[in-house]
Length: 90
Image: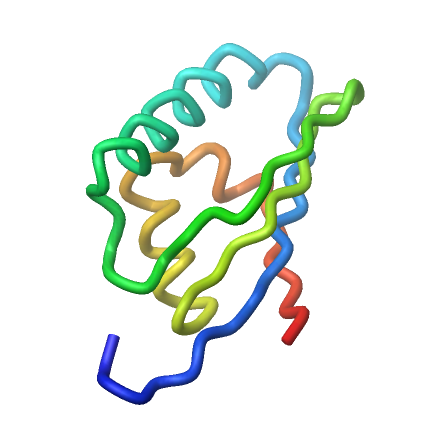
């Protein structure tokens, strides 16, 4: 992220098939571990996560742009990324 670059708030809408549940759960645990260890790219912050009972979740992220957030997802959760739509909020 460059100095003075504006951050974007995004909602990640996750909806996966029941048969992907175990793989998605493993990827999410790995992703949360990276966040807790501070290993995410500069400027990417998870604000909140809300699990759904129908194989999905809503997460609010702060990031420089959609591409950088998507690249972070590629690193920890390629299966989750395929089941995600990023919706810019601000």
